[in-house]
Length: 84
Image 1 (cartoon, one colour):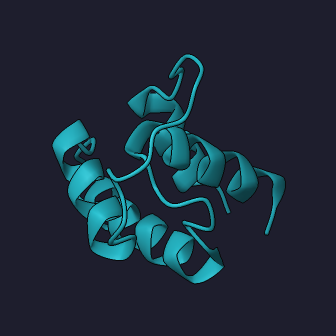
Image 2 (cartoon, rainbow, N blue to C red; image 1 turned 180 degrees about the vertical axis):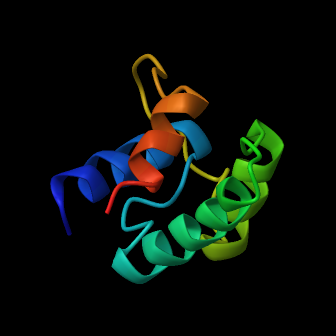
C-alpha cells in the first residue's frame, strides 16, 4: 500500500466508521475504482455516494467510532482516491 493509500484508508476509517481492519487493500482498490468511475464522468462524488461505496465494500462501516476530530473532507478523499 502506498502512503496515499494508507492515508486514504485511515481517513475512510475515521469518516465512515469502518472496522479496525477495514478497508483492507482489496476493499480500498474497489472503493477507489468506484470513485474514479464517478470522477471520470466529470462528477464529484457526493458524501452520500462515498458512504454507499464504502458501505458496499466494507459491510461493517458505520459500526465503529473513533475518538478525535474528523478532518476527512470529501475533496481530500477524492484527491487520495484518484492518485496512482
